[in-house]
Length: 177
Image (spheres, rainbow, N blue to C red):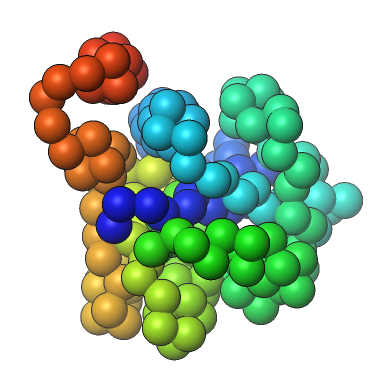
């Protein structure tokens, strides 16, 4: 994948406080978002019924202030017409990178549906979370068995970088330290 888009799934006020290892998850997600911004790659943001679960948490919203969230009620982003419309505008992209919450519900179902459509999907294992670590582990196993790829924040970003030179590389090093 040289030209993916990132989907940040449902990192909302009423969900985030209950996530397992939420501070580590948040730090990794922020690095991932900043990395995609560094490479000028597209980012989509979703919110699951925000009237009930609240908006995206401020530390993420502030990084994505120019992005209007896709409001959805389906667990799978791929089942939402707004997502499909926005994702369709990124048809030149060669893959989808998924991050957010919860791993075993919205992330898993999105990955499953995108794989069924024949898309290349990578799930960032250290930028997804669930309330229960067992749900997270089982979802990771199912994602791998579905044909999705498991990756990490640094694997994705250094794969995009490809070489240890240039201004982007220097900025990337600062970001991951």
